[in-house]
Length: 293
Ligand SMILES: [Zn+2]
Image (cartoon, rainbow, N blue to C red; front, side, top):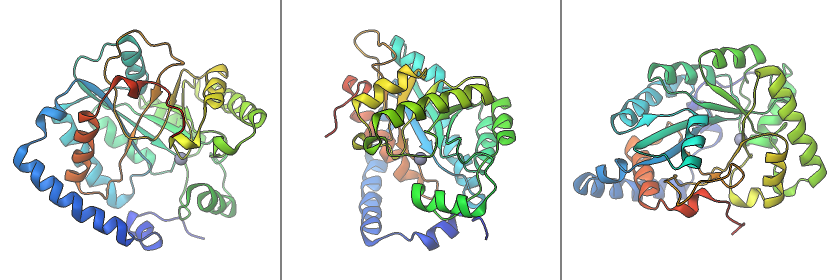
């Protein structure tokens, strides 16, 4: 009955497979090429790049600080609400980064503190079902079944209030971290209304939604409609890509946010390689809902 506290422990339970190892070698050589040719041009492009994390374990704090420091050289940090508004209004005038974090682990408090050192305000997407739950058994089950993760401690409502007071936003990640694409329409309607109500009551407001698992095929058009009907003003995926100015104003229901995942254990050059790639392939169609493919 012990919660894990380091990423090292996660890696013991979930070691890198051969494919991942080979991928890392391939990325190493790509990054070497990029060091020669440079990726500054890509990084200086006016755009909004959403990055999302899940955890900043004790042994990841230095890497998080280092990443934010390096990002701050080329980018300005924007809050989630500011980012959403800027894309809708077509006011992206320089390179911006917007950070979010999914699942609401306890170590997100430390993430919020490190973010504040850089005056970066993030959005934390949480599952109200697990907030304040003290049953190790239920937490272990939630981590295993919903997150494919060893048992880790979650934030309670006091923690959430604390990070809000630090200037960060709280968003919905559904009640219990469900796969929306296999959830009945009525159940998802109830889920959205309930999470919107709970978060509004507990946090004062709840504007943003990010669906669990995050790939296009984990969501659909009906889900999108439900999210906005329940009161949220944005919907995020976990598909790679960034946002540039559209050729017209966007209604809130049209914008479909893309976010690049970051694991702090990754080589920082690899992370910047992904950022440069997202920037290079930025396109206005990235701003819109894409049918499952
Ligand atoms: Zn999640």
